Length: 157
Image (spheres, rainbow, N blue to C red):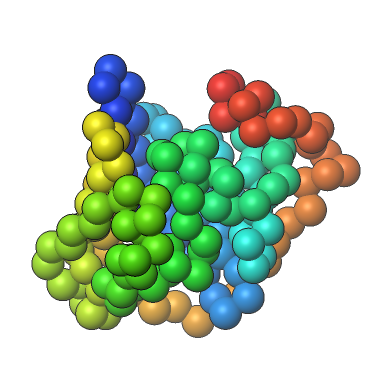
């Protein structure tokens, strides 16, 4: 997936690999040199964000992380429904002032592109490739090797 976030002078672009099974999800955020910069592992709604270069991690709620990154508070279950099936709780998002639009259809029936807008901020997610693979997500415990930090510190570096 590719993402593009614009909010006034703030711009973020990047590539994310997202794998999931019925128990968990793993997101790997790549930097401009196509190296894994951050990993986000989610079990239920409990998230662990790891910064590989700083050997630090943060633990917290998935929707809190989305709120901090892009101003969109959404649980992982709704995130999956939105990106995989194009289903969205318009009343819930409308309560938060979030407008959604979708374009195209991927190989598995979900939207090819999803746009979320809140005020002047806009997040566009483009699904580049969608495929099913056997296997399961293994969540790694980084606590013994990495230092715990708050969300701002893990994201800032």
